[in-house]
Amino acid sequence: MKVVITARDFVTEDTRAIDLLRAQGYDVVDYSRESIGNGISEEALATYVGEADVMIGGLEPVGQELLARCPNLKLLSRRSIGYDTVDIDACKAHGVSVVRATGMVEAAVAEHVMAYILYFARELDKQNQAMHEGKWERFLTYGAKNRVLGLVGFGGIGKEIAKRAEAFGMEILYYCRHPKPEWEAQYHVRACSLDELLAQSDYISVNVPLTEATRHMFGREEFAKMKKECVFINIARGPVVDAEALAQVLRDGQIRGAGVDVYDQEPCTDSPLRDCANAVLTPHTAPYTSENFNALNLKAAENVIAFYNHTLEEKYRLV
Image (tube, rainbow, N blue to C red; front, side, top):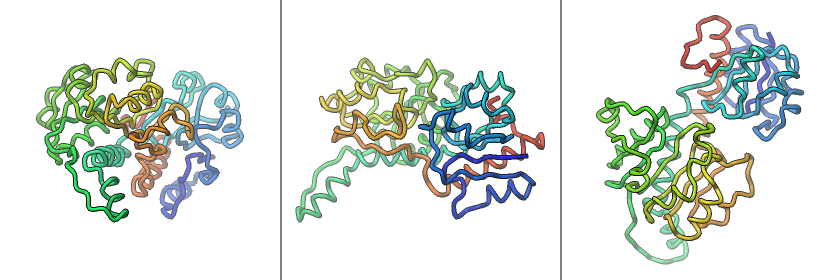
């Protein structure tokens, strides 16, 4: 059975994932060093996938065009939890199963969110710059303790953020479609309406999937409801936020700052946020730790083996 790997950096110094597949007898073709990403067209991606039975992918687009060009494809194993670049209906129509590495990226992404929070909370960049300029300048910073963190979305990532924020002494609000009373004691959080969260939070982290319901969930109207001291963080998906509106409120000083890891189109080198001095921008690297990527790679490979051994846990299955 032929397995094609298009997910970038699948093979690093840690070769356990690809070694596992080959030890199980799979014919593995590795394109992980080709820098294939979600900017590739389905037509171009099909030249890599070819006659493969299985594709291990990252953020590459998978839809009708690719599936029509790759009739042998029966399984897509995503090395991620997000699937907004996968046409689920098309996969169902073509009989292609989709599995993902649920439960693997949450801790690394939560670290990234806390890094944004602490960047704005303690302003080490300004203190460091002053010291390097030979200036002894001390000033009070906003801090994190006793500040209010609002989590929009409370899935795996939201829960991991809550664990870390609680350790910093933050008050945590959350908004999601299906709040559960037991979460309040378990994660030291309080459920509230979105409007209350926007009005009360000093830091807001958006952790929702991209759907038609969440597209441009945050725009001028939502930013107008936030505190002037608020820091807005998006580690979800770019289109969840109206980037032009965010850039405008940052330039106007309507909110204190933003941390952004995701963009409407990726790779992105022309974000409207690029000229906002109070925006911290990273190139979709929230899950990018060596430990996390090695774990993701291994889980993507294990999911392939479990699928064909009929032992796959349902939490990993999308289709």
